[in-house]
Length: 423
Image (cartoon, rainbow, N blue to C red; front, side, top):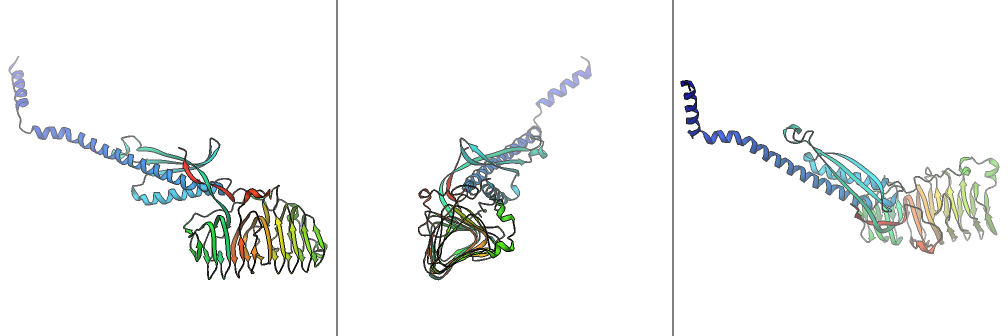
């Protein structure tokens, strides 16, 4: 070896034996790797925590929404409730929340109707999303269905204004086996009271209500929005002058009214007896008024009212009506067009049976007087924009659905409830 080579080998040996600065050198080489491992571990821990939290939100949203599966045939109530729940809890997460893409579907799982909540989360990763490339992606999926729930029998659908469900004086609303719900407020003043299996309001509830009303409830959409109230050709034709001149006005005897158009309405007073024959009865440009000692009867009937018509049961009148058993309006007993904003009044002394759904979605139902109302009905459901009771009537909302051959429409009456996760 030449001298130069010998010198290089000698220097290398001295460098290997030299201990000066070795710790700093090793630290310089190892520390970045340690820091990267620590940052990566912290990043992975944060991702795992985010995934667990997102799954908790999906599970809770599905469970909460499952209770609304029966309120609309398309599942829109359940989807909206799940969406609102997720939005609220992601908002609480704050700036550390991942970016989330949401999906809500109504699915069938082994014959059970269920709601599926899918939340796709994304977080940037360490080193500007280079590790892993594109950042972290993780999913939270939850599916829930319901068990038995309290039947829905009174739905006050208005969502603006005050005193939309208003019971005053010594009035009593009795619904011992079903749910009374207001999309706005509930107020019972004076000696008035509301007794039901369950009571809930979206905003406030005041007065004597048993059990204590739940407030802050989710709104319940009109369960009959898909019901086509104009499908019957009788509603699409204007009344002629001749038809209006032939309105029914009686004060004695028995009068059988065939289904179809009733232009100018029907007014019965004195001791008249009016029998609505089975079918759909359309009241156009006139009211159905039963007053004094008159009687109104009908089985397998649905009475509908255009925008200028309403029903009034007054005086000592007797009323016994059973709703439609089949057809497009099965389960409906009294209904109004969606742009009807009349006041529908029940104040007669002997309104014994209103079996079926009373559907006046844009109108006010007023119950007054001093007598029991609908006590003999196997079941009754009310869907109205507003309900007011005054005086000292007792309105009975029974829920004995198996005791009648009038079917209960989907969205009201018996519901599934409680909720459980399927996956």
